[in-house]
Amino acid sequence: MNKVIEFETYLIISHKKFEIHLLDIKNFKNLYKEEFNIQTDLKKIELNLLGAFLEKNIFSIEKVAGGFVNNINVIIENGSILNFDLSVKKKNYSGYITNSFLENTLSDVKVLFQESYNQRKLMHILINKYIIDGIIYSSLKDKINSNEIFLEIKLISISNSIILEIENILKRYQIQVNNYLDKSYIKDFYIEEKIDISQKAHKLLNGLNPNEVRIISKNSQKHSFFEKFFRLFS
Image (cartoon, rainbow, N blue to C red; front, side, top):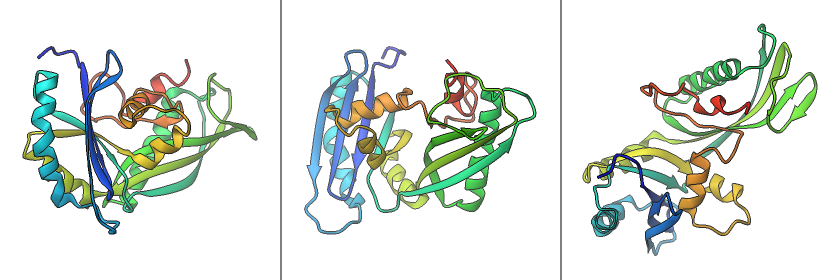
């Protein structure tokens, strides 16, 4: 199969239903979409049913894509997802607020989160406000000369136990998870736009929200740990 990524697979999981989408990136449309409604009043995700759902659909998707599904993006709606709001004040001794300064600040936030909540995985880091010299910015488009910045940040995380269950099921099909996304965050960001959730997620993963800091693999040699800040001041 061509090394250029042509398709993305999205698995949407909630206590109400499972969905799976195959997104054609070039033409930005779903080539395959299937869902399974779960008849239950419980708020718990019935992961025991997920294997059968994947068994029914993975091979159909591979036939459409013309290759194996090795990676997948998982979108979750679940009560174990928690939002944490926090404020961070950081001194700046280098003059301008730069990519490197913001990256280091958020790296410290991530480390602090992992030390305090080591049974949870970060899904999203969102910067709600930048406050510099008493002025509130919803985003930063220019480098600003200041010796201090105040950030209002939202962290969205999920229990590691849910992730372990999902990944153990996906391992049966030799599939690894690229990203975990919070379905509520995606829905709230797109209040009016009428496109499929896989298309919405793809846009967010590719930088649509300028105030989301995308966390990427430590092993990447092409980007820094927080990829977003290479494009923040554009």
